[in-house]
Image (cartoon, rainbow, N blue to C red; front, side, top):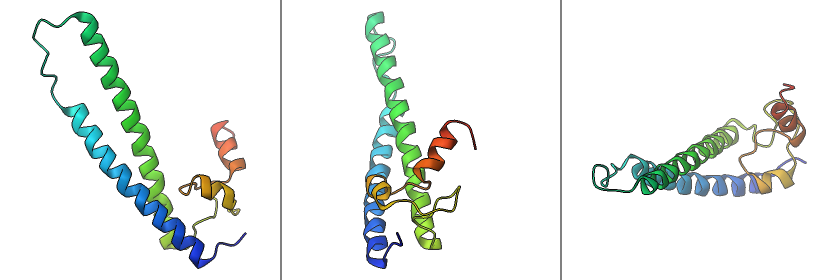
Length: 121
């Protein structure tokens, strides 16, 4: 399954669009999480404070996940530049087009990713 230049160009465009969207989203999320809680110190009910704390924790988790995807997108763009896009970082095998269509930032084959997640690598 050798990728053509046109396919690589299409994936590169998708990855750049993903990078731009994630960067914008992360900037907004980070600003929201860092925003001081203006209601602290006022007569706010403890349940309201708990809800606010929970919301902030969820925002931090989503920001962390988005940051990880952004790092993967950046790695995929590096691989395009290096000429190794579509090749598994672990096994050296080709990553299927179907996987790249679903996750253009995939750096491993499904089999290698499963082994990695099981702790076998």
